Length: 230
Image 1 (tube, rainbow, N blue to C red):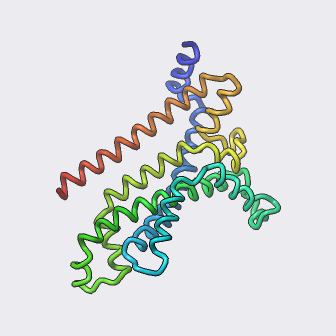
Image 2: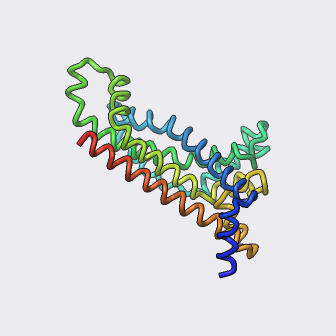
Image 3: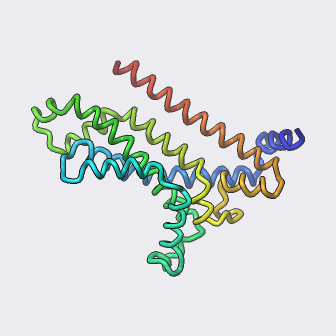
């Protein structure tokens, strides 16, 4: 109970250490989601609209990558960014940039696979109409992305929730360095092992609240879209 009370006090008085950790977490996760969405949404649209050799195997692989183990991603990014790796000269290992890279790789298949499914369902409804208007593959993909934008926003929010809750990959490539790469999930793991339950609980409250807000936002967006467009 003492730890719980202290955790609430930390949150209530906006403890500087807690605020810094939360701010870095949001910065890293939002950056990762932006990169993953910029690549994943067009990829999902291209697969949904396009008809090309190897399309079905690509869909299978993309769906399988949704369950990519975070520690494996962390290891691969570590090998790429380490001094002996191909990108070692840039000195990105144990920096927020490395964490953004790992999170983006993790959520890219999620955004691409889920958006592909949503856009493929929409394509079945609009294919004949778009073809009759002379729309090419690129124009059709853009049209579907705009028409399904509310559903795609919920997918992006789901990707953000996945990124914010990630611990394994960011621990490997970030190193959990105080004031540099310590985010909510890695800080919770560290502070719990140290016995500092107050800070761990405070961060846990914020993380749970963030997840609840994301799910609420996704639900409200979906409901608003259904009311507007039927």
